[in-house]
View (cartoon, rainbow, N blue to C red):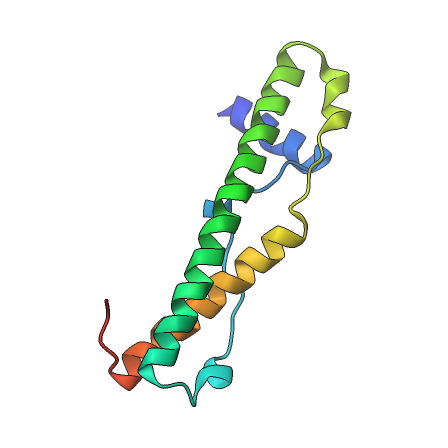
Length: 117
């Protein structure tokens, strides 16, 4: 338990990338999509989901690499911690927004009684 706490503190200090599974969606209003028909909702949902998956894979690799660098640095040569790129960046912000958009589209799809694939 103490080791996990120590690793979390190190990540906060040196800016490890956040695992995308731990990223909360940004609240997005469905007003932008209110005039969409079911087909339009599905097309937009497909696009958002595809881009969200691309970003998930990118962010997951980035977080895994940071964790590997952190572990290696702690075991072998701690000054390497300063080489961690860290932070989540623009991709994480887009990923969180897309998660919110997907939720808004799914809610609208249910509200309009669209058929789910």
